Image 1: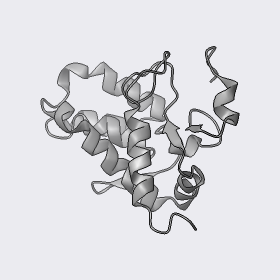
Image 2: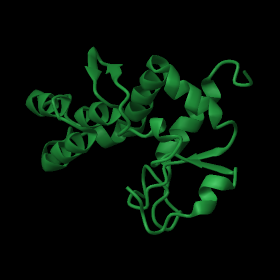
Image 3: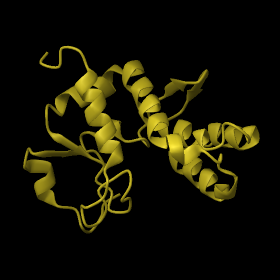
Image 4: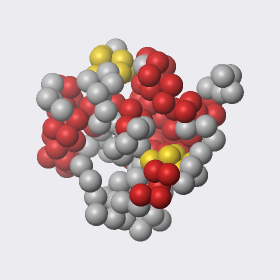
Length: 161
């Protein structure tokens, strides 16, 4: 999927690594890398994260998300049930995402390889539609997903190798 406001300099400047959808797409939650998390093998980190909204009180919704055909479908299902999200979910959503991504990183050597290839560059979830997880259309978003990946990168042993 291409967006009109993409900046081709992003890909060539060497200062920023975007992962939506380029060479570093494995860092995206919609990429096809399974992740074992909380005793289950999820198709994608997006499946796991969307299901995490409902873990405390809505096992049927969790199952529906677990069985979703794609990450996009998992997201759509979660949005359909926004009124049933666990009451304290947004107090811990960053912690949950970091935990899921740490598992994804530990279980998928190719994801680790791509993360290492980012070096010390700023990582951005360069979606123009998301000001929380990404940097948004005006590049002034929080970029929480990029921050998590940079933190996980800093935790990798022997980064110079």
